[in-house]
Image: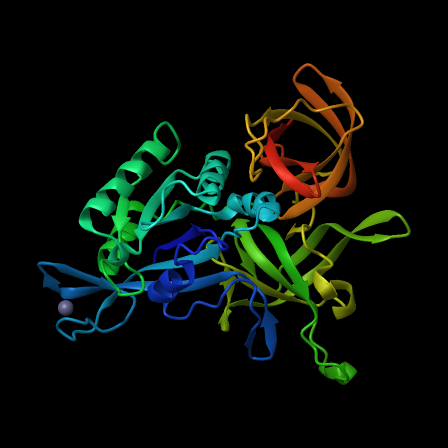
Length: 403
Ligand code: ZN
């Protein structure tokens, strides 16, 4: 079955109807960062996997949905696409963190409320984020069409068209829906299936897992012989993980001011509560290991990469970067201009699933040299985002290439 990951770029403070939409699409959306307890394993992830179905009998109109039975003719429907939704935070300080996750995103949904003037500040922010992330597969969803007149709907459509002109979303289809009243959801699903083709995954590449969580699943007081090894949560960026694979985790853990890579063996693989024999890119996975649970507890390995021993990218504790700064600070209320970087300035960098602070120690024409507080494991091709402390918050100001 095809598999696509889509990012739902929606605002939390401004209620564009994200929760209702994802509930309607997936039927079992857990709200962002809610605790999901399955088979004793607690996995906190802001995502939902769903399967889209198509009725083999209904032709005019074709019937798409998220149920295994056709709502029109009651036939058994066919599975056509599995989609994993990752929620994008509405909170601006999380924007850079979210962007670093776009390394594993294939597509994005930009949600706009038809009963509000477009763009709202956060819609603007999300579009900037999409521009930076380079995600080209975008569908714009015009939600809450039940709350406006036909004239208001067309006016809102014009505002959206004007807003996305000249951006990465310029050619994105705009689909009017009401998630609340289940209007046009079948057409939205059809559009997702047709517009978001499953990318070709290169399974021959060395596997790289972006670690987004790490945890101890044992209940307090468990007998030693019953202890389950540390679990890694995240997504494969490339390659295949199999049970019994010998893996390495970098940069790993810090002991007495030094960072150590960790090696272990995969003892199990899961997606949601389903056991896998092997895991491929697409959707979030849990990797069970032989690691001492105390090493992985409380997300201690967030930001590290896991891969086959000796096959991971380099670990950097300083970086030469070529920055590309934005014109305006993302998330600032007064549309602040991005000022030049300064020698001695502290910045936050996000790469893969890692966030690290750094100090600019050298500044040449188009290049900066940065000392990192926490080392990162990254390939030269990986996208690095750069944020600056403005007021009391880290604000995204651009992205960098590693040189
Ligand atoms: Zn049917």
